[in-house]
Image (cartoon, rainbow, N blue to C red; front, side):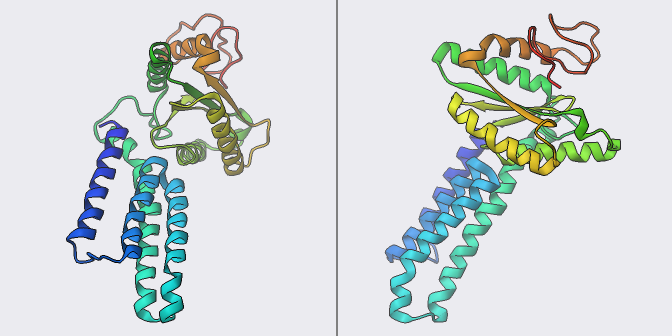
Length: 285
């Protein structure tokens, strides 16, 4: 199942449950404040389903603030009685659960689906998508750009060798999985994260222009540097968009499709370090 379909399914089911609870459920009410409070659950659900845990957390805070502001007249009239406080507490806890727990579940679900189905396009070391999946996604993004002018960008995040220099293999894998998790948590759930090898991650951003990709790059670079405690020289990032780097991205996709054990290399690449970049460009890592 494609994640966007899962997202739509979750939101549709959420709408059905909330509407039913307002109209016919045990919590059915004509109180405008309570109706808005239950509708705010949908806001939090959309944030969690589309942005993951971080988006769900922000949406939960927004919903909580709105509900508290709407509840102020009742507090002023009746005071902080249990009858007034308990519904507020219940809604706040619901927002937190849907936003944080629901967002965390959604952020993992598409990779879980792929793993359950035995998808060969998952990278076992990091738990995100593989280089071959990235190649297919980049090619598909370029085709959409050529046909429909749909923007598409890639953020390449590279952890240079010094980050892993003194790490044992087991610890290296842990750090790579931590970086992968930070990248997944920093983008929309409709975006994909893939591992190209040699410390190089590719964040695939469909329907994203250069300005949006630059904002994502800044956020991800900050998060990964904090996580890996890396200097500016050890953790780097670059934005690649179809609009101005089409040929480079095509070459990148071709190089990613080549099996690691293949003796052949794409034109203009270097064999000094594992995964390499397209002709005329420096190695990926």
